Length: 114
Image 1 (cartoon, rainbow, N blue to C red):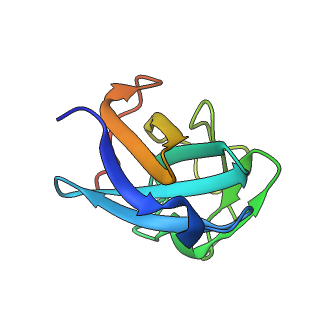
Image 2 (image 1 turned 60 degrees about the vertical axis):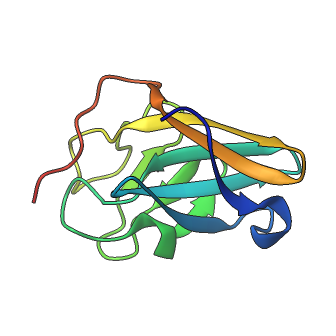
């Protein structure tokens, strides 16, 4: 699979999110700076809610339904009700595009099962 282009960098504003579907896996891409992007599984581990519809603050994304926040480096939930971490993936900006590699998962979290 390897690196896959998921969006033009211009499509995702700094502080914004983008939903990417990579081989059936929903991924929330978060742009934290001009050349800083993070990628985390898009489905909250508490309930089946899409993180890309949530809010970004510092290095976290907040679930829009119940307020759980997830660290974008570790995938760990920082606020209840979520207690299980989410997979985080390698992401980069190159050649005017945002790229994600699901094979380079940054933690050992399992995909959420609901």
